[in-house]
Image (cartoon, rainbow, N blue to C red; front, side):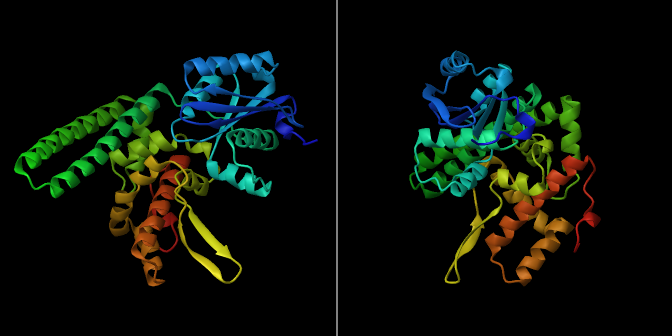
Length: 334
């Protein structure tokens, strides 16, 4: 029999959820075995069915922990629903689940097997409880995500304009590009106003604004996507959440793959660090010194930029965690 975490000895059940866009695969564990499993839709009706299914099996909020992977945006609605129902919910970085699966030598890869593994992981580990963002944070996230989506569409439209030869087609793309640029400007103004109206958001953005390379729009993305720094025990965990930790491939002495960013994590946060990192490599003394050392060691340009993105996010995390403005003297080698 597996022992439950000491902090959750009163728990009877662990629910593992393998989250998909349209469906949730469930596995309910009692500490020894998976006692029940089913699939429900990932929509409000399915969430209600999930709650009824749990209660029919005696899995109440006071005796059940819930664990699920961070799966893009697909887990947010069910996590919020279960939190509001009173369950202790943990949303875990996919890298941790993948590492646990490897440690358990799991070879079966099905939704049901994944849900059972997540349930076992949630039972064994003392996981941090997930807290939903405030209404103000949720709106900021919605605004920043809409801006990022429009920026991507702007790039696509610009590429189509560059490739078009017919003047009527080019004119249509130029008109669309003008409209998208205006919508981006409108959203950026809306983000500024929203931050200005909320003292807590304004204070956190002001802290991040002290970091050379980080402007208001980047700060808004960091705050809305990273959430509270209390979610993470270290800057490295925050970087892993964004998929900015290096992934190594080595076997013995003969196989040595080039380290790359894992890209398993929050892509919006990762993308938001790209251009600020390039600016920081020029104007942020801490990031510039770090980048210069990598260049001296012969690292390629994209490796340096990726490392700068990670370094910049580490700094953002440190500033938010400490509540103190950026201080270059705290970074060795600057």
